[in-house]
Image 1 (cartoon, one colour):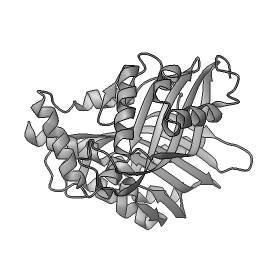
Image 2 (image 1 turned 180 degrees about the vertical axis):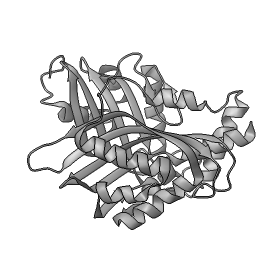
Image 3 (image 1 turned 120 degrees about the vertical axis):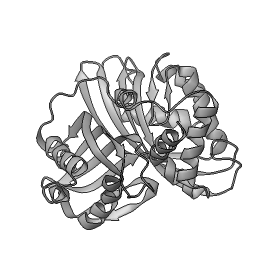
Length: 324
């Protein structure tokens, strides 16, 4: 890897090792070694652009979940230009809620949840990051309600004299380099199916993209089996959020001998909360889903898929609009 320490044999090795050192070896201060000083870290609920903010956030998480383990399930990656790498890293975390923090007083309850982080890496450092954490899974497992939690985040913004960002600002947050080029191959087929589904509710598009026996990992830690259950899950979204625009901001396809074809999509769906679905009574709120999806394919059909969607962010946007 050009520009990286010789100990790292490839991108996957680099990502897994630095994640382990920072989190499980509790080498939080080593974030300075592995993150650029002004590396932006963007999530659906926050943006930071200073390494000290990343360090502070990591300490806060470890205070709440001091025994957190991060199981690296996959790294889908590419080298976009010599020495510049793009990784999409999927993690399954397990932890015990033992400290104060954004989830309130400690409950002693066990939690497990997934995170997908997309990173641009150059010169032995992460220089840009987009991350989605399944916050609704965490919130529910410690006994809280996602709707109320999102409302509280919106109220916190209001009390601080701020507001929920605009649709344009959210979409811009989820854009960004490197340019992965026009969609092609398996990624194009999958994105076209999802565009038809999200924008037009054409659920029959899944017959061309998903195996009938597909397994889907969804928000709140839910596991969905088969196309019929996937349609039921997605219908809750498309009934709530209408008149939308689906955009793919970055894509990777990895094909390795002996493995399923693996796809990573960073995408957004901007719409209006104008229908009755999974997100309560319609408010007319403009809403942007900022998501990352990993898909595994056999014979050109998805057999396994992971949707990183932060539903807390959606509830925050809905509540913030109602407060304005």
